[in-house]
Length: 245
Ligand SMILES: NC(=O)c1ccc[n+]([C@@H]2O[C@H](COP(=O)([O-])OP(=O)(O)OC[C@H]3O[C@@H](n4cnc5c(N)ncnc54)[C@H](O)[C@@H]3O)[C@@H](O)[C@H]2O)c1
Image (cartoon, rainbow, N blue to C red; front, side, top):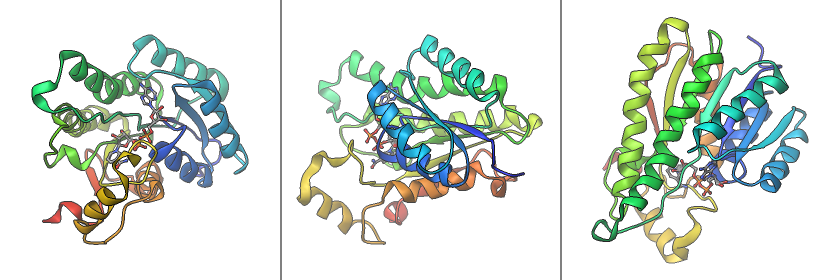
């Protein structure tokens, strides 16, 4: 199947890993819907993607809002006539010690990171054709523990479990559902720790460097492509070997 004229929605694509994914998929010929929180940031990313020779549009969408997500999919189908793939990437990871964690902290992370995956996948499942793809960005935090991230670890573990269950439900329609679990990736969201923390993190990574958005994008592009046709319900860890020991 040629990629030409295929359309993908990438959530949280204005920056970081999501933008890296959007660039990789644009290079593979996908038309890209950039879904993110601010119109100017969506437009700037869409402009960069257009320069790669594909169609791209920026649509403001808070993925934790059912009404906003419904609007995102309606506008996408109105503009491109169809949808071939969804990449659930938007997510937040605020560090909060467990004894200080409020119900609001918990709800925020669970709605942005996990409920959003339900909402977007639910809309996608209504319109994806056979051969359609859903790929979600999980985290190594779905597999190992991190202090200050109980809510985040729970949300990403939820994505892995959701991925397996939805893969079963969509298999009869030949739609695959997979996830990628990044390790420590250089992004605007993850840049708060400073040089010393980066050094300490790199010391734990067998491949001895931070990951880049392109490292995650390569795995996502594979899972979105026809080359992954017989893979479903899987979580692919992309972490430079961080979680091997
Ligand atoms: N950076 C890492 O080391 C790392 C590691 C593992 C997993 N991840 C996951 O990768 C994904 C992207 O992370 P990143 O580091 O690129 O983050 P980032 O903060 O650099 O970028 C995230 C983007 O998502 C958008 N976003 C946030 N909330 C949103 C919402 N409610 N609706 C729509 N868009 C929203 C932001 O505006 C931003 O553009 C997240 O799911 C994160 O949990 C990141």
